[in-house]
Length: 120
Image 1 (cartoon, rainbow, N blue to C red):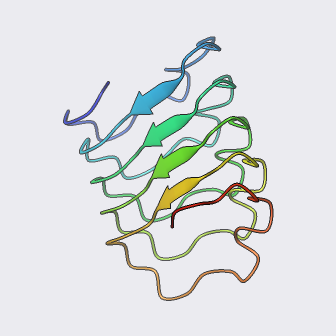
Image 2: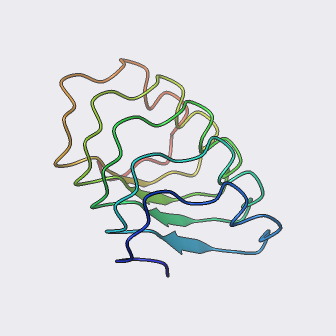
Image 3: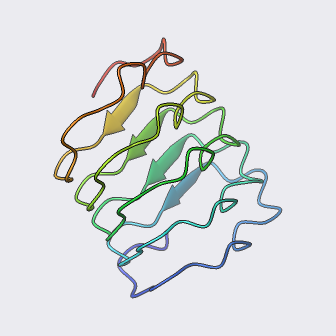
């Protein structure tokens, strides 16, 4: 748990070789950006908490290496739009929290690859 620290940025390789990590919490850390390959070796992640940061955009491939992810919390950020395929590799995704952002619309096919989605 790395929550509630004062990071302006996080090193792209901080989770390198953490292939057995199941949960990551970066809530309330003041993050503005996520490095493109931040989760590149976190194949077993099931829960990701990124709420209460300053995130404005998230790259389309950010979560491609987290196929087992079941829950993601992106609430209370400054996200204005999401790429259409951002969750396309997360077929087990069941819970997504996008509340309290600056979203004005979502891509029509945003959850096309998420048949397990239960809560939005």
